[in-house]
Length: 541
Image (cartoon, rainbow, N blue to C red; front, side, top):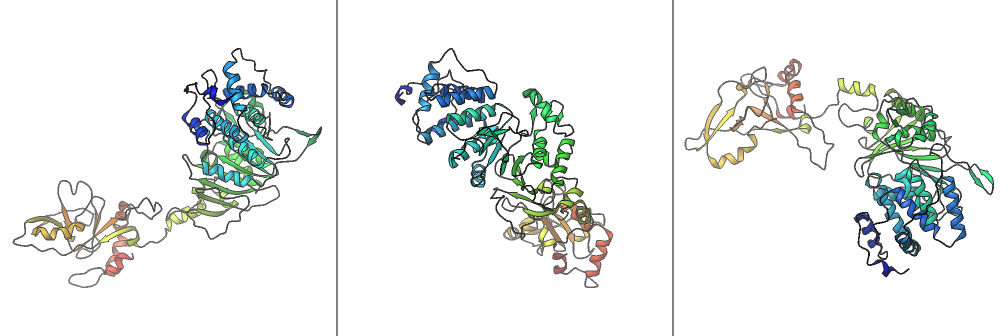
């Protein structure tokens, strides 16, 4: 049927802007979806594809359709109102091969929803990683689009087992019938992902295992959504894998992949990497016991962040695990990474250190993020009590106030805090110095106007006396620091350098108030009548 017959259809709410944008951007002929057809859900789209396959004149397609319906336990789909389905199915099936693939992918993307959608860059990375693998297995809804795109791109020769898909919900049937409708060589398993189908090749069992598994186990999956999974989830042997009406499919999938022969890329939640829940903890322990864990990456593309676990093929022993924070997956299964790494972005951690840290796999736990950073619990405690040394000038802007004198003709009145106004207990006391200066000089003195959060340090007179400026101290008035004081002002961290070192000024205040530090300052002082501390000693402290 020609495209023109569909031009009178109006857009319907079920036909999302995302689908229409995809269709018209790719140059696909106009395709408006009648309101009688449900394409907003996996179940509705699956029924549409089943109907479209049944309309074909190909006996092979009809036989494959019946075989799939039998394997997935589906009754034949024979709707009473067929007009809109017939017209739309003929239109969809009449498109050129690439256009038909793009149109179906757009409909699938809309049916799966934004929650399962993947970043375009991540999809491109995964397609690049998988393109040279001979046998692949994809699992769970987010990988459905990648599975179809891989099969469309590589066109595998064998339709039985070179590309496989496994799911736990409506995505499973959708993958099966979408593959048949698009003539893609994808075998969709009827069993759960952790219990693969027994495949047959010319009547003989095929025991070839996948070279690579790409899996997106859901962080939460409710028992009421798939009660038939309970028996196989409990068979994994993980404690509390079925708990409070939910399945821990992440742990079950990792437990299964620990025993597989090939390599795997598994996208998990942050909870799986660090949670003390028994099922997750035991799964992580088994993963470390097998010494196949290669890398754990926190992917910063998109929100929320995704966490990628990479498992090497069986037989390869990794006594170290690379942890990283990155904006791309790279080509993790084939690229050897050097060891001259930025410790804030990547590090190699011995498995023994991970075990001593409670078996947590969260990358940020092992990457250095400050003076108390470290790869294991012992390092953290050691660094807390023996912190790394930093120059004061690296953490605070050190402002040296200029000298101010009273000017008889000055019209700009200021109040000055002097070293003598700071008590040994860190309080501003006594009467402040009041003077008048010329207005033209005030501009050059703006830097020494004290602000909330400033630390005032006496480098002359009562050496080492220090105070923390609060908003109450400067409320409704301008107070200036005299030449006998130094202002320690926290350096600002820009958005371009989020990892810049930073010290809370209150922490510095407590440090400078300690007797040992005050005694150290007195040793640096020079001069008997008016002792002072050399500038260089202050900035390098």
